Length: 260
Image (cartoon, rainbow, N blue to C red):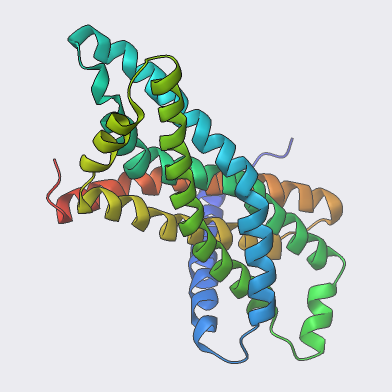
């Protein structure tokens, strides 16, 4: 195995971060420039949003069900099993819904973007687009970023609702709670800060998923092995950045919204 100095590795990582920031800025700037490829945006919205719906629904349902099951074990010690709806709704809307949905979408779509664009790079299709006068960033990257941000917002809402339904299933079947009481507790406990926090995160996470997937795909080198390497790096980087930024965004929003 080739030995590389720590200094070179540090410089390489800094260079990668710098390239990613410039890449993301270019993708955002292209939104305000013509031409706008609305057909490509709709196609990507269908691929990313509708294609991810089954795994998002399954993840949300079982997460809500497990959350209700685990919470009931703790609440039962204090005689407060009826509050399971409040715990499920707060946890799903503020944290688990956005994060788990983003991780599922990242695993499915960030890798897909990296492999698709990486294959186009190694087969010189990107160079052909430039030769024909088409901006690959505008044609390939910006539609994916726009579609991912837009669709992840609604996928998170669906995941939250399905998660509450999963909690209702456990509350009704195993805990013998009244469904009306469960929904009443679940909705009444939510305030504006909870909903705002839960719906602000998917916008940022969607941007991270799309830009990282496209960045590694557009910078794939080394043939088919390079495409596979870029795909793996995209999934790992997107997942880690989602978890890291979740902590930062949560702390920032708690400070801004004065949540304790």
